[in-house]
Length: 213
Image (tube, rainbow, N blue to C red; front, side, top):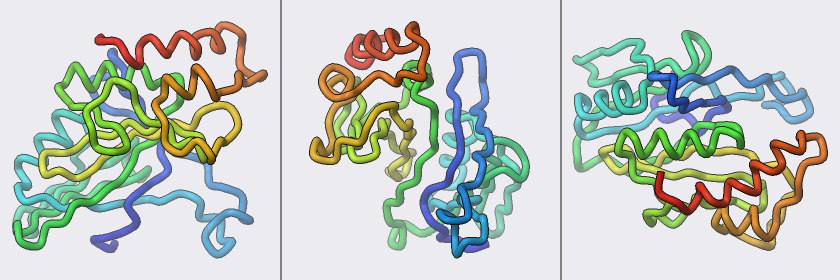
């Protein structure tokens, strides 16, 4: 396993008020036409991030985020975490000297319907929510070209982490990066496959995105 694998994986994460630990489900691999060398490999299994204080980082990833700490090798200054259960996906956190540390980025995925609970849970545990540009916000950013909502935050070292939720509707690349409230109010189109009650909740979600919980 390489220490510096690609900085994203395909997983589904849930911050639920009734769930003390973060849960992730395996994502089905993409068709061969969209997979690595046509082999059927469509999801990233592991990613790695550096820290200048392994014990501090362990407290954040294990206790604050609730990840399952699978294995720790103190003499190598590394801790491994299962994402979604053993064998599903893995995060490695490596202790390094301050002069070689560099900021890194990776992202979890959540469902669009999980955005409100995720924001509320992050506030509950004291995580500062950031927009795409690194500024504190209560109104997450939308990558309109995807389209997807990106909820950014940082670990104690300053690495950039993100919860990504693909959004219903058509991509609007010309819109760039915009607040989620703007996406819902001006650009999104209801998904006709979604029940009417859920479509209404998407409109009402503009309220939670800008209000204190």
